[in-house]
Length: 456
Ligand SMILES: Cc1cc2nc3c(=O)[nH]c(=O)nc-3n(C[C@H](O)[C@H](O)[C@H](O)COP(=O)(O)OP(=O)(O)OC[C@H]3O[C@@H](n4cnc5c(N)ncnc54)[C@H](O)[C@@H]3O)c2cc1C
Ligand SMILES: NC(=O)C1=CN([C@@H]2O[C@H](COP(=O)(O)OP(=O)(O)OC[C@H]3O[C@@H](n4cnc5c(N)ncnc54)[C@H](OP(=O)(O)O)[C@@H]3O)[C@@H](O)[C@H]2O)C=CC1
Image (cartoon, rainbow, N blue to C red; front, side, top):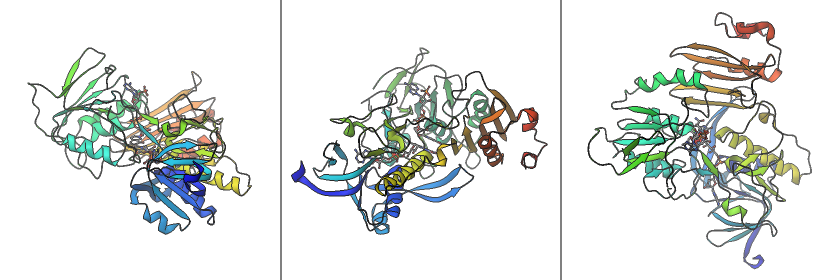
């Protein structure tokens, strides 16, 4: 192995997604003299643009796919290697790439993301959506499709059932309400009418969404070559339009049987059933501690259980003692924050500087858009882990806004804000300062009170 080693880098980062690229940016700016290698399987890298800190913890940004030369031009101490890592040898501190090259590292950060947790492996009629290639494949098949079945009830399913036009969409949901990873039943109820309504800009010409409420049948997967995950507004650049006319008789390319006993024929099935961390090439021959969700366990310095190996983004599982108001979700924002913090930790270690867990891990916060509504999630927005010790305050104006506050022991611990509520900053402050809100009771959500003045 040692003879074949081309070069030893001070830092090697694996993965050109948002976690890896942010880590590289952080490292190269903190230690401009240290040589850094970014090894990535895909031809492009993902870069954060138009970054905006909305409040103390809320952030918004766009994500652009760029050629890696953009990074190399910006950081002269960076070398980008386009090949997948095939194996990792933590004892010799080296990685081997698919094209047979071997590189040494002093510190390594694994940012290899995740892949779709496909329901039915190796079934050509079952698609997952993860990266540009899989989104293009989806679009290609959709334009010929008359009916698709979407399985799953998280972020991707929510986006698809709203965005797809000109094709019948059967949405197989095992829960009682839609969007279980983001919403409770109340918020789901608020959003449902948007599915039936015409979209604001272009009216959906032929959208028929049917709901089922049982689990899907087990089955088969699409082969996966890893590229960076898509992100905010991934569907905006591509037409998600089907073949329009529906043929109710005749045969379908594939049939899916659900646990409610119903069978549906369709052109293909989208398995929007979560992600599995991309750990395979790194595990063999090493001693990583792996979490129950399959992620590489990392501590509060983003270190795995192997010496000098860090991990960030979708591939890792945060195993430090979390702040009572934070939880990990495999999101764009957390990939950026973890990549940035991992870079800082690696630099701090080399420079022998102390470093504390970053403030962004104090409070969970996420801004996104579903069904064309702005959605802000804060803290324990669904009362995660609180048990019966929680009280919910809800304010809802149909078609306009849905505001839910989770209160525990008189303190605000979470919130869901749908629509242009303008409450995010005030609520974030109330959650962070853990003020006793008992005296305010339900007045907290009284629309006739300007809550900002109230707490000034
Ligand atoms: C359709 C879709 C929509 C989404 N929408 C949102 C959203 O609106 N908001 C949000 O917050 N999040 C969203 N997400 C989630 C978000 O995209 C991910 O959480 C985030 O991209 C994870 O970043 P990452 O850098 O950890 O991994 P990835 O972006 O998956 O990047 C992993 C990188 O590692 C490389 N790689 C993998 N294996 C190897 C290997 N063996 N050797 C070398 N390189 C390797 C890949 O090529 C890739 O460059 C969405 C995800 C999807 C799929
Ligand atoms: N706007 C945003 O913020 C967006 C974020 N994303 C992120 O991208 C990633 C991928 O999205 P997605 O695939 O939707 O993942 P999610 O984790 O959001 O949702 C997965 C869904 O699939 C369900 N599921 C899991 N296994 C099965 C099964 N065997 N049968 C039926 N249902 C199942 C889950 O239910 P259960 O929870 O009960 O297991 C859950 O409803 C996620 O990390 C997501 O957060 C994606 C799109 C938009």
